[in-house]
Image 1 (tube, rainbow, N blue to C red):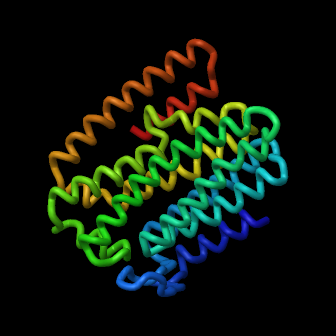
Image 2 (image 1 turned 90 degrees about the vertical axis):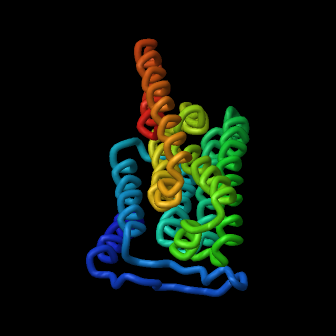
Length: 268
């Protein structure tokens, strides 16, 4: 019921909502207000992710109560990240999503492999968040604001040496969240968990957020042709390597792992 209500609300917002901020609050001085905004691609991405959760719940066996509750909290935080107009608000929301992903193994396998899986997943996700935080703070310094549109516009004309670090941090964050090789390991770790947790909590929420992050910062990457070229070649090699890995795993009968590697190839 909650997922259906969220999907219906986002559909209404997409078709009838007025573009612009629907909620704003000042937090840090000179950082721009924390806002939630309608209009643009954020509502579309939130709707797609919500519908994916609804489909996952309808197609697989119902998860345990607390695993479903964690997934719902993660969905709420993900939708806040999509609709956030401020980098700081988006970063906090992404942290909540990452905590929900890392908590899922503890809930499902508390007395077995859960703690080991949670530690591995949490450490890898922190690496991506470190890259994102570095990029956000550098953009704040270069543009004078954490409002996403203003920061991205200010970064286009900023010092090239500093912007290389910004682009590197953003690329690392997107690469890891999307589960591109070799960072598909955090998604692969969900193999012993329930179908809903594997399919949605791990393989859908953060990869979708990583793809949306890459989409939003593409102008910064494209403005540095040499960096964009290196990233393009690297991503192509990753796609080929992960695709070959998925074929080898498929021949060995490792169906679940082969799907993860196929997703890693798609991310590349």
